[in-house]
Image (tube, rainbow, N blue to C red; front, top):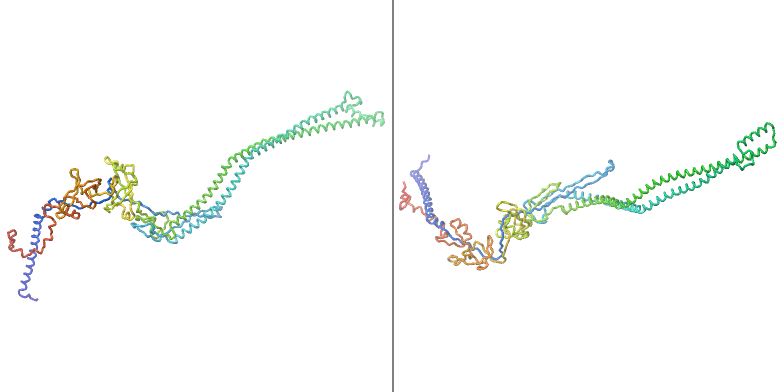
Length: 622
């Protein structure tokens, strides 16, 4: 092992002892400095801070419009607008089914739009005309072809319905005119029919009467023939020409004569020829008489048969006449009724036909509207563009989505649709009117003035507590586009409902005006070198919670001071940025600076750590 040279070990121990001594001295020095600073604070700073100070804050007299009114606070609310997808892209097609009695089978066909790319996101500010999203070209083309094909079919159906309607209307018109003509001639037809039937019956009645009149003469002829025959058979008182006048007797004589002639063979008896001649003569007369009677009877019977036939024909004619009369009457009444209802019947027929035509026209219009709405929605390039400016609050679709149902493409808050709702007390609301202008200042933009208009005042109280009755008031925010674009939903705003105002007038902060003995004063700098201030009298006018009108005593641009007192370092520091000068009764804090205490002025050699400090205090070391 290498041995340490003599004297080296002692030298190392001395160095260690020296280092420890220095550390101890440094610690003592820190304690001494803390004691010194505490003493300085207690003797110099603390008394100064506990003393009340006057602080003067500079403010300027300005010219403008000073408004006075009721002040309320509220939050900004956005009106939300949307771009919606609500297209009906379905069409109904019909096909003939030959296997089912030629009934039409209706089938609904629908194509859908597909999103290719979305250009915006929630929270993004957009301007009118900005691209929102784009649909795929293939989906746009498929939907367009479907609607155009449906439109062609609808036009064809309408043309067919129109042709059918025109033809049917013509037929209904013809029926109407026929009914009206039948009505006009119904009475004449009825009268003619009645007259014709009556004439036929009258003709039969006349003919029967004539036949009945002839019957008497025929009956008389029969009676005369019978009488002649009876006279012939039985003779008469005046007939004395022949002995044998009785027919039976004549027949008996004839038979006896024949028998005698046969028996005796006498052919030329005295009276034979006479008897035979008489017989033959009588027989001839007899036959003539019988024929005359029979002919007269036949003529009478034939005549009676004709009368009976005529009677039957008359009865039948009368029955037919009654039926014909009934039918004619019914026909007449139907014709009259049809004539009276012809217009109603015509209108009903036309209305029914018109409904079919209108249905076809409606289907055509619906398809046309579908196609028009589709073209307006997708445009020439399949891109949806913003219809207004504002901030996007929601996006409804993503790239790759298929629009199978209605929905919102985007929702956004239009720049010009901003309102503030507040609750106003019954004492304040009576001074407000819809359309009044209000002053608005947003907390986020102090000093920037906005205007608003009262849009509505609820007439029903929103609060009915024992101490307060409130009414909802809605205010619309007005302003230039650039200024309105700075506003966001939920921003706090102070609203002044103007009850009075003074235009082109001087005003200053209310805190700058001091009132004493009924007069108004402001602090002005009397001596800039010495920093002395004095009160200057002014005449005031209107005032609100922030400003007061200066009618005389000051000019535009004059500087006045807001005087206040402070009693702590914190208050002094809070007001130092606005304070041009301070007036105190003790040392000015500006004269005291910690930088004046340079640690280089302290030298460790000044402190005798072995013998203690002069004047006693700390004891010596070991």
